[in-house]
Image 1 (cartoon, rainbow, N blue to C red):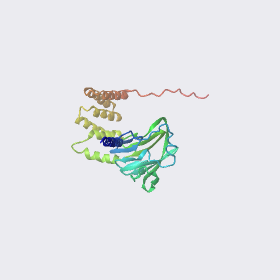
Image 2 (cartoon, rainbow, N blue to C red; image 1 turned 90 degrees about the vertical axis):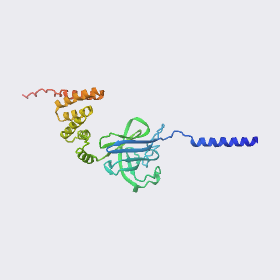
Image 3 (cartoon, rainbow, N blue to C red; image 1 turned 180 degrees about the vertical axis):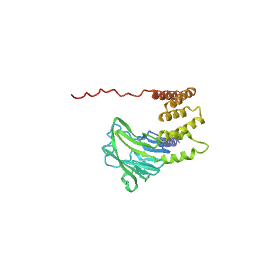
Image 4 (tube, one colour; image 1 turned 30 degrees about the vertical axis):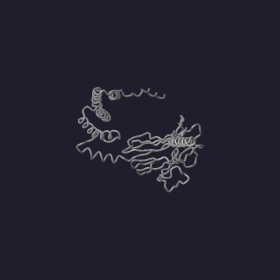
Length: 296
């Protein structure tokens, strides 16, 4: 009986130990990251695993030159465009693509790949599945990046850069969304309806160098819709200033200061004050030059 109990206890201990081993969670050596960045009229999403240098020489050693790299660790890096874009000047349809690269000393070959099942099995890479291939120059970083990083940077209304950095090497390529025609159509359709987005339309016109007189008309209507909105009044002051109506711009900027003070928003108070200072700043006068002496 005693022997049976000992065997039973040993069995239970082994079973519990095995269960603990199966559920033990430890940090991943190359943790997964999902980056979602609002861009243009949708999002750019990047999913990748992030290896670290750990004292090693990365490019040319850990990551070989001239060979296809999954651009990270574990499975392939994936990039999703929420709308049609241009990548490095070439059209790419909305969707998800695997991002592979071939590192080089002076440039990386960058490939968008439509077969998402390939993953890290680069030995079976098939060029027929390439959607796009191009070369991007490498840059030298002054500060070491320990962990492989992909970032969406230099974001404007319709463009951004995808930046990759690791150790002392950086690579970047541009993406552009051709959204102007879509937005202009939407503006034309919506400003004639009851719920009129005058502020948003005026902002787009101001930011993208379109007809400022139309923008002024819209932003004025927006201030009438929401007379206490100091952020709308600030846009009106900026548009007036850009139209060289500095007197009106100063009046609007003073309204910004008054409304923002009432709304207890110190940031907009300062922006109104800064705009007035920039308007009243005296223009630089070119230094006088001495007349040239006539030769005798």
